[in-house]
Length: 278
Image (cartoon, rainbow, N blue to C red; front, side, top):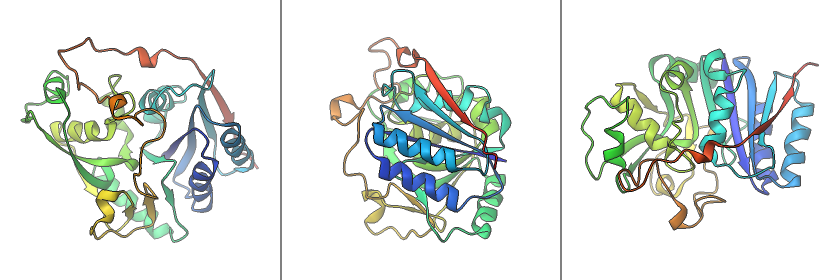
């Protein structure tokens, strides 16, 4: 059984609505629950999510929101969604993640779900493969981590990873390594997951015929098809945290230059539960 998780920010009810409606319309019996994170959402976005939850009767739904509706960052809220009880890391075979600009389309079939499940038996993370170069002192920080296994990391390291906009990962692997790590705030969590997989000899699978990435890097000549639409509309700019280049702080970017700070995890959440009973 899988836990399907998604998160939205700000005043984008049409985005999260499209994601959630696709989860409903293409629902599969493998899904044990749906989890939704809310970061500084508008009243319109909040109402859109809650109306969907009230109508959705296919499985339990959990909604997570900082008590004052602050934007606490993607990965601190993701950690709460994964590790607050009932914890999908402990209770599901895999976690499927959607950013709110990713969704399933109407051509998803049971055969597609079967294919994803088959791939996930042989690979730790499934999705759309990307590459990015490390920033600042990330390489130094990685070499101090308990999961570092002497796989060489260059100063200007090239990460191979599955983009964070949509992925499926084995829950046991995420829980064993306590991912997402406390050092991850809002940026770079996907590339660090890729490096964790490399260090631990865990495989990632580039789902070329099952996931269509619309980010600029993939729309320029990459032959991708698929019924999962990732980063729809491209990456024309960030929303919220990291919108300005100076705010794009990546895990261990300043390793050795300043103390590691986990203050971004100091917040309380409100959780809403919908039983999903007809």
